[in-house]
Image 1 (cartoon, rainbow, N blue to C red):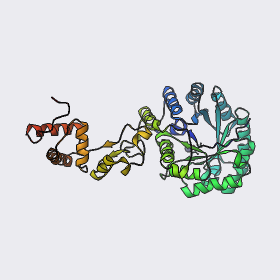
Image 2 (cartoon, protein in one colour):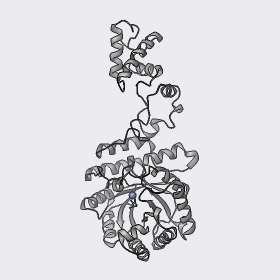
Image 3 (cartoon, helix red, strand yellow):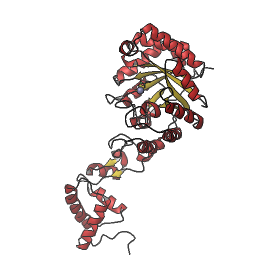
Image 4 (cartoon, rainbow, N blue to C red):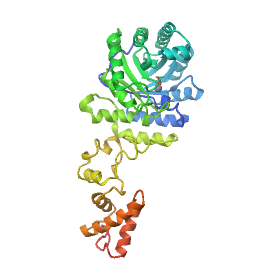
Length: 402
Ligand code: KIV
Ligand code: ZN
């Protein structure tokens, strides 16, 4: 029986282990893929694209092992619109509790002409045949007209229609080269959903690349256009500039719940731990200024910001660090910091200062901060110890000290 039920909540399709893994510096061993698959299950993703079964023996084995071990999410394998790919994907997914074959076939003229060297008519035939073949193995087939955003609209509607008629249950319209902009992508979904007969029976999906830094914005726009599945990766890893970052999409839906009003199954407090897990496995972590999971995402150095956050975090934070699994916000002490942050940090270190002592400590701190890029806890402790020796900070007794 076909699925054909459009969900009332947003589905998260994670492709960290496929689109993410196929980018430089991101390859993972078989055991590492299993660790990540369990972490993604724990995070709450709905569909887990475990690899591209025909790409290598290693990918085949990893998909098979994940299908065997990870039982809650639906497990997907990528496949070209070819018999041998579909058969290989079906074999790898055989142990899965719930399986999906994800078929992609280029639809833009530039891809048809220069990459596949086939006509539009041939593409339509291959789309229909491959989806129908996949449906003989699984009841859940996703079809992606690759490079949808550079595809002629009439032809995009045609190929989507053919795929739906052949039994596709999800239609993904990828922005393969990260070319589109939010308004255009939103309208693409609206137009296809309006024009294609049977569109109401399938789930539409967004899959965005970040070549212009718009992957998350475009994904969110697609939701406004009627997409109910979003394809993402942890830390936004993926081909070239990467894919839409799962943690950013999920956090946007939380912070702007008043705008999107969409339920989903992601456990937000698992976002940071999963991001850290991935960073340990692959050869790089998120950049410090990366939204949600970067080390500066909840760090404050300037005095005005630090004062605000210490009075009420909502002044400069639109979500709490804890809500996305980050242990706590971080006050970075540097030359832009003020007395409030210094007092707070010294207090955390066990030093309660009088106003005069704080003033003396602050003078010493700003001199030091002018010379050093960041002032660490050890610097502060040295600073207090130095001044106590010189009797400037006589009253600065660490709490609990005899
Ligand atoms: O970016 C893309 O077009 C893809 C497809 C295989 C869905 O990753
Ligand atoms: Zn992609």
